[in-house]
Figure 1: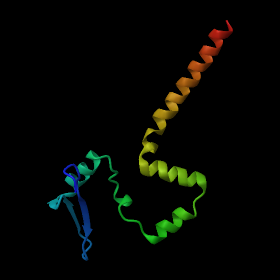
Figure 2 (figure 1 turned 30 degrees about the horizontal axis):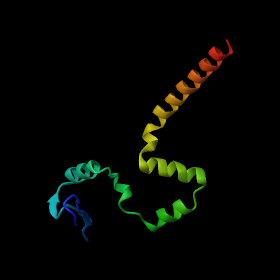
Figure 3 (figure 1 turned 90 degrees about the vertical axis):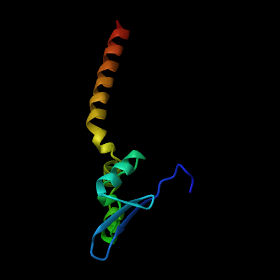
Figure 4 (figure 1 turned 45 degrees about the vertical axis):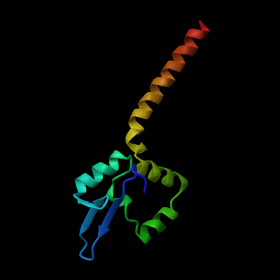
Length: 103
């Protein structure tokens, strides 16, 4: 590994306990997630382990449902309200611009 690389390891034991390590050093869940966020990785637990029934459920989704799922996973869903507000402001500005041009 290069000096700038970080190794993240999450282990689920036979007793369903979690163990997190960063560069081989045992850390708690909070530090593990903080470090992942620090390098721009999602930390939602459901993104770490995918079960077969979830794969089948994803495969049977429509294009619109897949888009919504991907937006939720990548976090862009969190920006939807801001995007829609800015889109409305843009549309209003375009209308004003057309009105000014017509004068």
